[in-house]
Length: 334
Image 1 (spheres, rainbow, N blue to C red):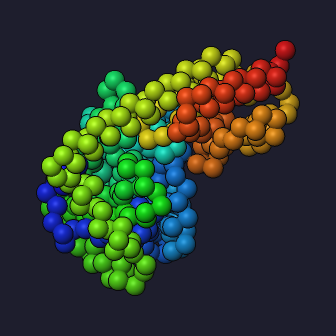
Image 2 (cartoon, helix red, strand yellow):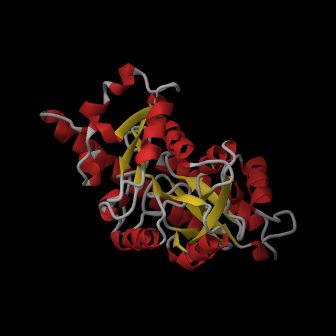
């Protein structure tokens, strides 16, 4: 993790957990109290809300701007901080993003850090997709490195997504405290909690070091595998997104990382059967046997979005795109 984040990391800063989801639960459980507020992205992964609400905390969604590659709307964020003054415990930043596939530039990460520093706002950074980035200008940069002690940051990550090992359930959180040691009690609480919950198996943990810090020929083999994976994901995303972009009534927001993309459905061009994202996904599954998730599952309620995944073969993705295109054409207003 030290190599990937660009920050020196000692063993005392790290807690190994049962997958990244388990790591996030440790972090948020230690950070939140009943009636406190957690800021989460909209659209964003629903697990943050589930964990926070299970501890009596309130989740408030801050907007990501689809017309700016899903960057944070700081004006909206400031409004939320003012409204919930004194109650906000932290903000979740997911980069690369599920469900949007966005990858934040170093400049935008610096803007986030400056905003959080000014507002004394701790960051919970979900970086499970890490180096799964592609595209012309997409480079993963950990927000902990950008912060460099100015803002307290808790980084959650794991092996599941970047190394395609979801069933291994090996994740971790790393505490990058501020110069003022604002996370001292939160870190201590997370460590106490980690002693009473089920962690990652020792067998799976034994693979962490060889994977993160390969030696000898393994270093070259793993580097080539990573490059091949990024190339394959890039090609598959282009195959699916380019095909869907040809559909009148759909707008694809091109991803730069992770495994997902968001597609906007123009309801003004659709017939009466397609009223929202849920009716779109249900009808698509029924008529074409193609499954996509409604944007509402990720909190995208202001417009009609659906999330697509491009992990399948190019042949399968093209077939799926053709079926979606046929579906959209069939339900367009003539």
